[in-house]
Every structure is written in structure tokens, then in C-alpha cells.
Amino acid sequence: MKRLFIPLMLPLLAGCDQPLPPPPIPRPALVLTVGTHTAKAPTILVGEVRSRFETAQSFRIDGKIVERRVDIGDSVKKGQLLARLDNIDTGLSSQAANAQTRAAEADLALAEAELERYRQLHARKFISSQALDIQEAQFKSAAAKVKQARAQAEVSGNQTRYTDLLAERDGVVTEIRAEPGQVVETGEVIARIAVPNRMEVAIAVPESRMDGIAVGTAAEVRLWADSASVYHGKVREVAPAADSVTRTFQVRVALPEAGNKVRLGMTAGVGFHQQDNGALLLPTPAVTRRDGQNIVWVVDAQSGQVQPRVVQTGAFREDGVIVTQGLHDGEQVVVAGVQTLVPGQIVRPVSVENRS
Image 1 (tube, helix red, strand yellow):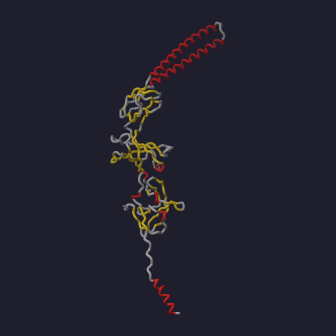
Image 2 (image 1 turned 45 degrees about the vertical axis):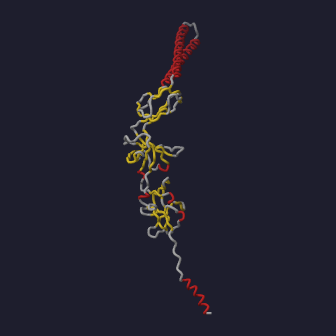
């Protein structure tokens, strides 16, 4: 029996001498180093250069345009004629109203004479007091008709003057929307006049970018046509409510230092650097939810292990998510494939900056 036992043990002893399987190769992980590359980028929004004062000129009555005196780019003075409507109908209406006024005045003169005669007859006891009262009522009615006719004549006169479209301010014509021969309606924009020496940039700010933007906030403006020049401006106006369609807030940035290179209608980028308060901007996939908290996966520089860390986040923007607390400069954060990580897992960091 002892001889049989020894041969059976030899294979077992030989099995103990086999080498252990190699440890798993650490999986590569795309990481981003916290520092200058993750500093919160300033909010840069695209807008259009406009005038501080713009006037949309329109007629106050309907009619057919028979003359236009200005073109786009023309400089105009307040009270200058811009366009004119056909005034034949308004002239006839004014003549008819004046004729009605004269007729009402004649009726009033007759009623006044009749009233004086009735008063004399009443003083001599030839007529009753009731007859005198009736005549006084007719006189008052004639006087009221005169007032009505004069008011109507004044309105008709205004209608005649409304056929001339006059400039409301000094400025430059930036838009023309009507030509001679065109029939226009009341309030339809015919021309637009802007004051060229008061420039500003109009931008539409999304809800997620409104943090820190208020009246008086400093901004830097760069023109797309002249990106080398930087213009310093301040927020002059912020809409109190968002647009119901675009869900954006209309903001106006004044440009007190605008020179000859800044022209109306140019495209400009507006940057708000005051929002850089030490917060970090990470790619959106780097932040996940776990147990009701926002976490990121941080790689240990010594062991290569990843561990989840709770962070405080701000706005989720189009270009990433803002992290306000929980990270420090020099730490490496996994920015892709974080759903497959487990605490303590060893990874091989691959830097985003060096990936090519």
C-alpha cells in the first residue's frame, strides 16, 4: 500500500511547482489633469453690433408710396423727408371736412340770431318759457356740431400731413423696406434710422449662461472681421424675462471705445471673464450620479487605482459641466468609460492632452 501511495502523490507535488497566472494588464483610461486645461473657460457668446438708438420709421396712415428720398447709408437730419404717399384722397377729405365746418358755423350763426329774437319775444311775453328753452337747446346743439366739424377738419388736416414720412432723429439709414409704387399699411416699417456714434452688441444669452451677467458687468468684445483688436464694454441692459420661443435673455453690451472699424451689423464675440471664479470645466461624461451624488473617478498617482469622489457641480453647459468643489490641481480625472470602473481598479492613464 505504501508503494501505491507514493506514485499518486508525485503528480500532486509536480502541480504545485507550476507558475501562477500573470496579473491582468491594467486597462487604459482616458484622463484629464486638473489645472490650466480644466480652468473654467469664460462665457463667449456671439452677437451683432447695433446702434444704441434705432428708430423704425413708418407711416401713420395707409397709402401708396409715390416718392422715396433716401437710400441705405444716407445720413439724415431730424425732420428730413424720407418718403411720401399719394395725398389726393387725403386732400379731398380735408376739403370736405373744411366745407362741413363752414356749414356748421353758418347753422350756429343762424341759431344764435334765432335765440336772440326768442329772448326779446319772451321778454315781451309773446312766447312761453318752454319755446325759449327749445331754442336755447337748438343753439347749444349747433355749437356742439361746430366743435365736432372743426375737430374732424383737424383730423383730416393731420391725415394730409401724415403722407410725408419725416426722420425722427439725426442718424444714418440702415434699412429700406419699401419702394415707390408699393401700397403700405399703417405701422409697416419703411426705413430704419440708427445713431452711428453709440455702438453696442446685442446677444442672446441661454439660461445656463446667465450666472454672473448683470447690468454693469465688464465684457471683452472681439470682432470677427478684426479678431486682433479687443474692445472693452459693459452690460447696459438685461431683459427681465426670457424669450418664450428661444428661452434666451436679450443682453446689450455698450461699446464706449468703438472706433471706425466697428460697423453696424458686424458679428462680434462677447466674453465675460468675471465668471472665472476658480471653478473647473470638465467634459460632461466625466461626471456621473451615484447614490444621489455627483461623482468623478480620480486616479491615484502612486498605485494607479481609481476611486470615486463626490464633487459639487454648477451649471451643465454645452461645452461641459462646471465643478466648483472637490478637485485639486494636478489630480487626474477619468473622462471616458467611467460607468465600467470599480473602486480600487488599476488603470493605465492616457492623457487627453497627449492623445494624438
